Image 1 (cartoon, each protein chain N blue to C red):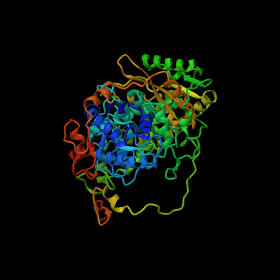
Image 2: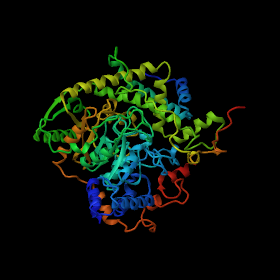
Image 3: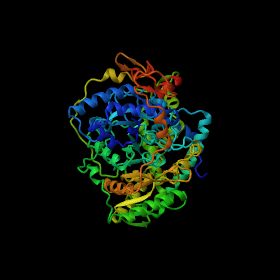
Image 4: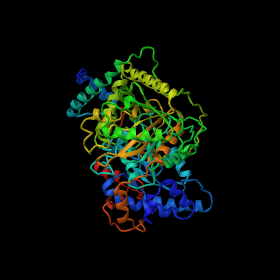
Length: 535
Length: 97
């Protein structure tokens, strides 16, 4: 039943509930598509076939017993590989964590499990979420399902590509400077970065703690609202978690924007913005206007200062957060060293990739005595000004509308040669993290190369419902489009029974269970095989 | 390039960051960091006098709880991830002569 793959998560959840589709049947469909598409896309670091099928049986029993009744019960999901999953390899796409098997599960993932999610595996990302293309992964690049010559964006590139290629029904990503919204834009899917503090960061391997948020990535706004509703929770284990009683996000799924005040920052439409992206964004604004929203342009100010402020703050936090990787408790330890300190240095130097080293060095520098005030505190003062500029804007507007990225997905290899240029690509997403705001990307068209364009909707703190309502209303004007690869692959490659089937695809070498993996032979993983070579 | 990073600075940052760089990596890092700092210096265009540094967007209070163990003994599970272990402990190179 190949059309299962075309369903959204909520549609599939409905079919599972009404017994039209079995949970195992849904899991097999997704696993079949993974086999078919992975040789091209490489969205996953680890695929857990056996675990997913076993879990599917358990969930089916609970659904049959009436214990699980939620909208996502039985729906297969992919998790970004920076969220801890007990017993399942979690690498952050870094060599330094090539064999790390967490002893606990991240709170957001636990919330999904309680809602009856079937975890298919862990998705590829930029190493430690540092990058905008998923090319800094130690385990190979992920390719854009719309055109494999192009990047999927990043850092949640694996999650977004997996959703676009129908290799899962929805995914979790994390967003520190745009890492959900930008790849969602490049892959033609929908993603939400919630208000800081809405989703627990417990078990999310930290990059920039004051900026990181976990959020949903899916085919449409309805799915994202339902998933966000499931993962949002107050958690005492995350001291920045915020108790909020308004997480009924699906109640905002209304095709009604009459009187909604929408502002478009002129600063988001200026130099550097691709003309086709600009046209698509303005056309989307026009749709909302026709539906009754009050749309106008305004000056947000300070937009260009967000990037330098972000790179100081995020790098500073990263240099501190990543000091825990020292070759003692988990992960890679260098083979040869002289004494403890040299062991730390060698392990870290062998384990981290160039972009991670670059940011740790910058972060260590801006926090060092003599430079702390000039760089770190200056950036925190800039952050306060940026927050104030947004506060002022939200006195006038319910939603801020703009592009998610200045361009569509660049070619593979195009961005890494010039890090500064790559950083500039984050200009429309970064300030949202600095100000702790919720932001969402919704597909709004394609450019002449056939690559997706994403519309970004930004709300005031705790006002996810405004952007969900605007996104939902806009979405009613279009139909969801998936890349050819998401459809072609499935017709050619859905095996009836995957568990124990003979190796018959190119993906087998990656997915076939190696008997001696750290995860006790039940997960197939690129990290494991590459990690072994690394040793 | 306005910011010139000296050999001493890169050496010092390497110590802080606990990274061992090859000579080629050091040269690359000097250039990289210089360029980044040139770019970051853009922040000096902003008058931030009188602006309090904002580390968190929302007012954060310390979250206190009773200091009680709520999880079980996971020593075996945790040690499985250790590159080297001995007698139920993480094994590290000799640190005291």
